[in-house]
Image (cartoon, rainbow over all chains, first blue to last red; front, side, top):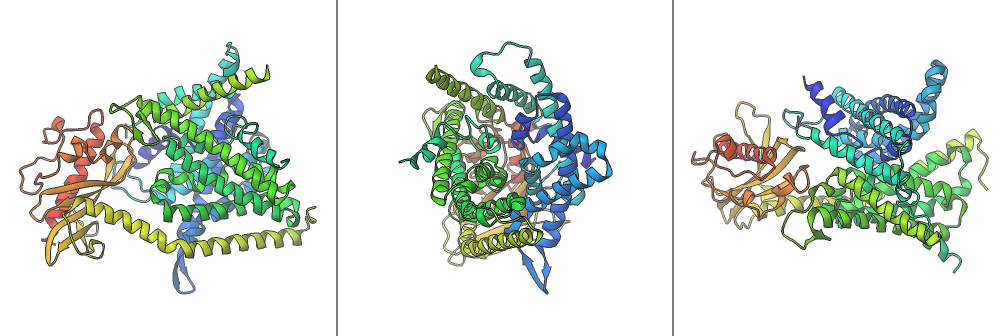
Length: 205
Length: 196
Length: 197
């Protein structure tokens, strides 16, 4: 039951793009076609799940741990360590995917380098280790499984938003947009209306 | 004088928000008021100037293939420094901006300038570029914040000029997209007139 | 220009850059550690000062850990004791609820020794700006209506009027108002348990 609440919260209520403003660059950049939007989302679900898994373990077993018989808290290195780990992880996924499953690599490969600088990945990794969540129960820090589920659901939320958005942009290609609104401005305004619609999900859990 | 142009270019011609459309996440997320926008802009500017300078210094000794990881480490270090300084001296602002301070690491503006400018120019030029782009970003964020604040909260720099509530939607998430969209339209319109 | 990308060079430079960056961050961390601690303590102290009558001790050093529910003695809330001379003038109770509109929020509730609310203050929240976030406005009716109410003698039903209670909700923010009541209820239970721990 709790996992269902986590998933609904992450996908709809706390939608990464439309309510938390993470990953806006790819949201605007690769949303011209539904097929690319879909590929990007799939790659993101994979990377965000893995990244959160690894950074969660690093946070709790490396940055906060007993080293040399002394309890140490070196969370002040968090930002540097996390971004390096994510960058390395993305590279590794790329290499492994190329070897193991060339077809999938063909589909997702071009999106992977872009994902390192997708702030949703680092953002989710930081949120799950620093913020308390309630999900209908007492406020608590998330455990490993909850963290991974939460951040993969965030990525799914990204997918829902970007695929909807890409659908609208494909339609917009056919319509007559005033000159100064062409390109990014009209995309932003469309995203604004989409965000307005997603606000309806607030408060349901 | 010739060096001065690097500073000006960042503010108008290469404005990171309105022209290059980079660093959208903090632009949309932290501009709920002019003050917050300005704080975010200043924090980003500090990181940008420092990382630009250090990267232009280090560029000659960094092998080409590992340059991006090296830049990221340098940037992350400065971001962490900014994080500590803000936590110590402006705790209220730090709390409002929240996660978007550490996320300066993945702000494409910072890495973008390192890659496109700092590694090919002198320390002084890189610093000027950092200041210019930083100011451009700060102005853009303050503008967006100001518009959202005036419409949504009927206040200017946190001083309320009317006691009623304002159009709340502009302070909320959708307002961010709408205000930035329309400001871009105005920016394009003015630029279009100049060119014609 | 750049030196050759041999494996030795790459490893060397990357290691050096990482070491340099870590050293720089560690130094700044050491320098700012104390100011950060001071800033954090300041915030708590400010909140305490706001919610209890004038005191002359240091409540941050006289903390009681009291459970809201005696059957769960491990889940405690922090209670800051404010004293003037040797006499206790008030208790500041930190209380967190997970029922807010935007997730958890934490408030500080000040009680006089007989259980009347002296004042309340919001420590952290993630409610919608302009709607639920009105709880941070100390002058609003929603916040000031608590002051002087006795929450422990049974004279006040801690719930919004919609739910049959005695508290006027914030217009258009019923969920936030309910959550605030929940936090107050927790605080009242903690206050009750201060003496029968």
